[in-house]
Amino acid sequence: MAAVESLFQRELTDDRWMNDAACKGLTHLFFAPPAERPQARDRRETMARQVCGSCSVHHICQQFARTNHEYGFWGGESEDERHTAGYRLIAPIGVRARGAG
Ligand code: SF4
Image (cartoon, rainbow, N blue to C red; front, side, top):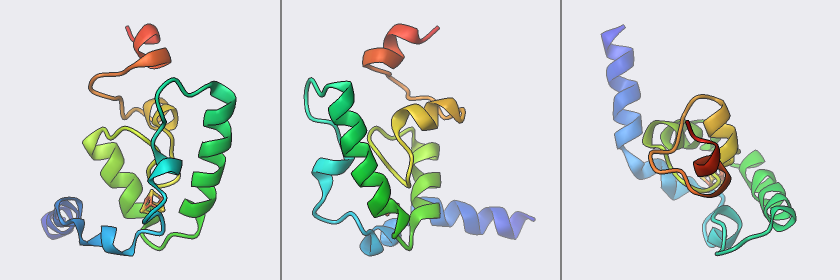
């Protein structure tokens, strides 16, 4: 068990998996521009989700974002979806900040 945990921890701190990311050059789909409207966010995240669906490092990316409380769209998940799954942002902004309690 300790070996599995050690391997998993090593994966989370080893960012070589990012070399295989399908989203290279597509940052605009994965991070919101200032003052993005909800409809635009939905469209952007739909396109990001399609990219993630074909990505070979999807699982480790999702776990990385959850563990590190990342902002943006990672591993097929939006910030809201990570928040709902119990992986809260450290400093939420916008809707999440107003709803935080
Ligand atoms: S799963 Fe999505 S966000 Fe993560 S590396 Fe792949 S394409 Fe990029």
